[in-house]
Image (cartoon, rainbow, N blue to C red; front, side, top):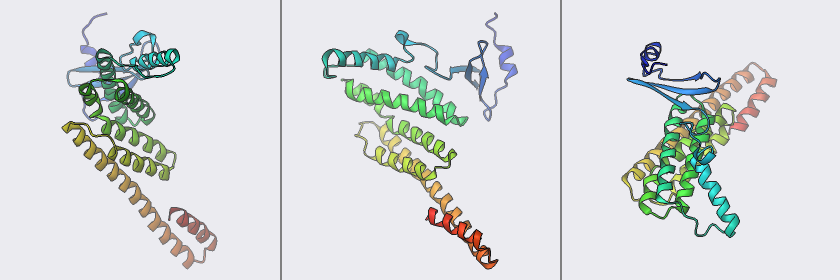
Length: 247
């Protein structure tokens, strides 16, 4: 097979408005592709985005967590368990791969996988917070935690909205705003920026949801007024019930 990818690039011209797609690979599995100005990147949809299985595990995080479980089984405590600098670097690199993928998945509204990938990176954060000794290593990763929490909350809330569970979606957004506000401080300008930006973004999204509800409430009240004027009391009763629920 020729290493020249000219035909592939010509078959899928670069268009910034339509640069992400899911295709069927030769073996039948689906893969995620992104068209860049000078090439194409390909991601696995499941497992690690690069398809590697570190030490036979789905992810390097899974490998470290299995090592932690073995440690606890042997010593009946996690005291003394340490994630080395080299292991931290591998976790950080893996988290970056997941970050690239969930950004693309968010663009195509694959919120289930966005939730999965952001949850993976939050697990890395939890592991690093507890078992990495270097404060510099911790800050390198944890400065991005507000952003990861934001993307995780957006994915969860979008899935709830799709299931018409708007009240639960609002709870998710409100709870995450408070969670970000109460995060331990990280000595990093990036942390402060991401914290403020994430709180503002989630607050704006929450206000939009509240606005949608207010618009619906106003519409129902107008319909109720019309139903009463027309003496359609059965419809009026149903509308009153809906208004009570929203209020």
